[in-house]
Length: 117
Image 1 (spheres, rainbow, N blue to C red):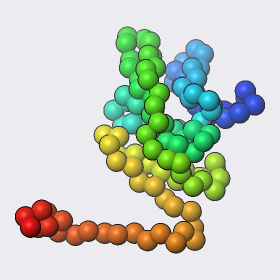
Image 2: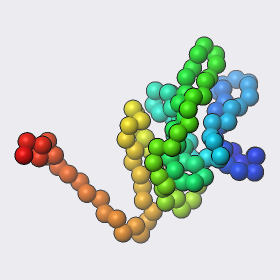
Image 3: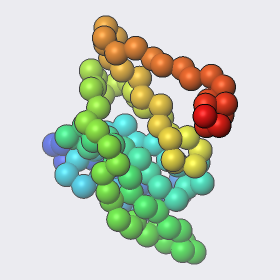
Image 4: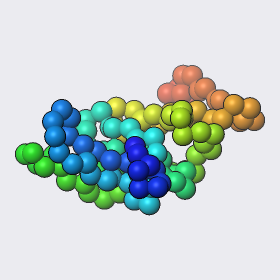
């Protein structure tokens, strides 16, 4: 993530080694997270929606596919703290609400028993 273009954008670059970086975000982005298998990068757009960018590695080349919104907007207090994370398969997200949020957390235990009813 860099603001060298005068707005925050998400980039990827080869590591280690030399080479240019490639912009991933569309219309700005912050708080990037890689999906564990490397097939997607998640980030928060400047409109506070969580975005997903499809990634494919072909030999030495990185192909950036479709960038699409997943959900949002998130309530973000600062760009310094990551307020979300993705599961290893990229199918679920954990979102940390801002402190003082009136929303509670509901935990459902033994939910399989409820399916039988």
